[in-house]
Image 1 (cartoon, rainbow over the protein chains, first blue to last red):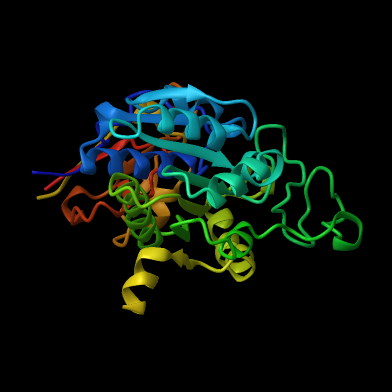
Image 2 (spheres, helix red, strand yellow; image 1 turned 135 degrees about the vertical axis):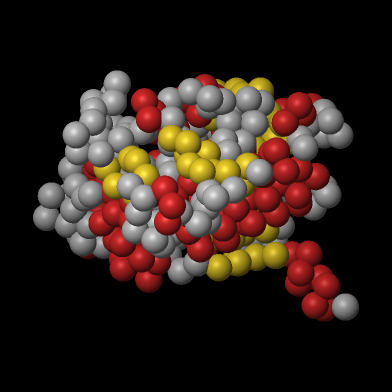
Length: 252
Length: 68
């Protein structure tokens, strides 16, 4: 009996990511959700700009490449063109979603667009060589903050969920991570729920996944996973930030 | 008995599976080098594997197939 194998929605090709980069795990979780919900034939993914720019090579569903940060806007168009027959998800990094694409993200959330957004937060610009991102932690050493991020000079990191959860629009916001097997299982549940919400027509679901970047953090893959536990989770606490359906249920 | 199949040539030798294994029976094969130039992960003790698939769950490159 096969206990575990590559999901059908993930193509059997080598990934270009660095050794130990958790993008691969998150790709697999998205593909597993697509498989389990049986939506591969009608899913359209929107790839971002960043390390995961070539995500379109790895999923078996249809994919579109959006301009930097504009994935939620492209997803809005695709979804609105044929809302009944398409499931649309975007897969974006923090340099894409939380920096240049912040306006698109906030407005898609405010409009409660019926799309699923997978947001990978690794607190650094990975593809361009490890520059400081809007999500880099205070004191974090990057290429452009060699003495550590100084909030006096560079401002404070943007906590996307704390900001979006104040909006009335979004349906579901949950922050998860993939730094150990238990958290991977929880992340899968959250990603599947985000897709299910879209199938049920509930609206905008955003899953933030705290991810590692061993190369640009200058750590071994396992040390990077520990760093998520020690540094990132205290700053970006895990959990459900908004679940409108559950709130409505509770209010009844 | 559990059986693990590794797609060795896609392994990047990150060692996350080695770290995740609750039985500590995975290792990076120091005497082997795959097509990518990494030391690939391998199962050191087949009989001790319980087929829990924790290694496959943590593998970023999705190279491990677990049968039981």
